[in-house]
Length: 440
Image (cartoon, rainbow, N blue to C red):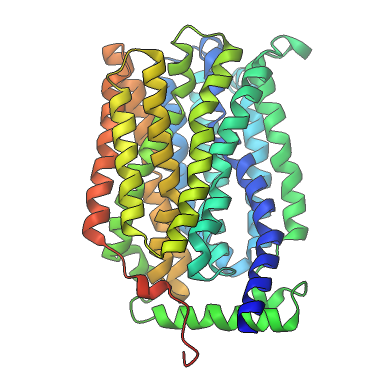
């Protein structure tokens, strides 16, 4: 009977939230990284060097870092329904404003380059808290033994947005001249609209906590609340006590470095991949399709590897193996000149980067409890995402200095190696994720 309630409850919660959250994150990630495709024609219009673009692409994450923890603490107080809707509305408006950089520059007297930087900073402030907020939200609804697959489903929106968004973004660049706008301007305008619409839907659709879920039967609501409360109680003795303690906990800081290495690969390569692929001599349309290949493999790997980790109740080696593949794939691509071999290496690296993400997020949620969960998750995500600044900037700076992406890719791969070493040193206690006994 208990197993039947568990299966029915988890299925109902998953079907209610996961498809919708995937759609929201798909839109969020697309608005965050579509600047990589806009770059193919935007740089010439705005007069951006490779270093300037790398700085502008990455400065988003500095602003994101500053507001990440406060945003998650606010969400814990006001609820996901209100706060996620606010985040989506503000980032949609600012992302759309990217299309009008020349107009804003003329109206304010600020150069197009610095207007680009300013809007990327504002976009970082607007979007801060969305991802860790959703990870925190999922801990309020799903027991620990389900989290790798659930986070995998949710985060599959990252490679999906790039796989689908690549040919779509390339197609939007083909609207050049329509309505008096350049193709890259249409890209920003059209891809900003869904987030504004979804902000309204989010406000009415999300439910903050299981106790508020009138769409669950009473026995399901009670089972879920009791299971999650028991898991939280089990973790209390290993969790940091309170907000400040969670921010300075050695495990939180160590996991921040692991995430830094992973995200360096994700964004360091992701922002520059369209440029690398177009350098093979392809048209913009064909660049869109070839650029999608690593993300299709990453999408499949993320879902399969997360399910495998949950099924085997093992985290450390699953994470270590994927980080090793990320380092090998990205590192090898640095020194391969043949386009086919280079794309194979980048695809291997993409499998490693994406498949590691759902496994990684099981580690902090296994030991954080109570008031430490929201700030702890936000701290890891904010520190880790600083590599979203570091990766793109280093790639652009090294490209300007050497004329090649090789040493930039090698630097990114080294970050994954450091993350691998820390993962093996840190370890993981699987007991913290097992279903509580009846006595508990």
